Image: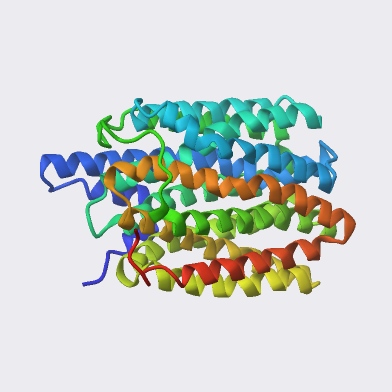
Length: 401
């Protein structure tokens, strides 16, 4: 029997509608899932505004150089290194409370963006919202996994991801429609308000989502493949997130509306694709999904390095965003091999492993760009994806010990 198409059309409404006609326990879980999805929606509504405006803001207002962008991204990603230890210290606090606090930090950082026109304070405000975002990422996944029933983990992660995608799409669409008629300061103020609403929403999720005796810090040998894949994903992600749009703006003079349109297309595709990918993971497994995704990404990176036509690069940018949905499989893979009490600390350790690479890659990529050109940065990214493909082929080939 086919899944209802409403998964990909209205993710927030779909999560809410599934709360009806269930037992009280299941109904409460569905309501809490809807709250997590709504919080993700409001967070990424604000973040969509940020994504659509940042590169043009960086070039036009901050007058940022490629090496400065690399330094900014490296510093902005550095809180992810300590996330396993930060969440370990706060492990006695319920996930919804931590999540609410994390979203408040993001809102404060975006408010700061509305008040700065120079590089140094921009770094400070970026660090503030980065701490909040890196706290939120493992918490969103952990809350979703805790509330989802067995056999539907990937589907639920996809639905919550679609809520985030819908929020991002609306944020980007607002920038696309109004363009330069709204000053950057007003955009960032509006973004902070949206994220603050998300902080209020997630506060109402029930508190008993994980075992009270969960360990504070987890680093186990049996999770080594997850750590390795997450580390390489940090390398791959940072190359594209940091330099893909920046290259289009700096080298091909892409205007604000072009950047916003590309991001809107991405998120509309992801809105439909996230639940579908989640269901595919549940049905055919993580190994096959990641194999297909990484194989395609190799050609995306090679294309970005070797092709000189902006219109083709626009297509490759959108394709990378679609293929990024496959990273849901890393979370479901961990959920399959991990003890239930290890989920939250292991996800936070995954964020830390991801950012071991994320701190170094932007600086290295910026220096490579300045010395050789941006194409060399994307060739290095292709090599990273090849390594990811090799590791992904090992999923399920031997027992985790």
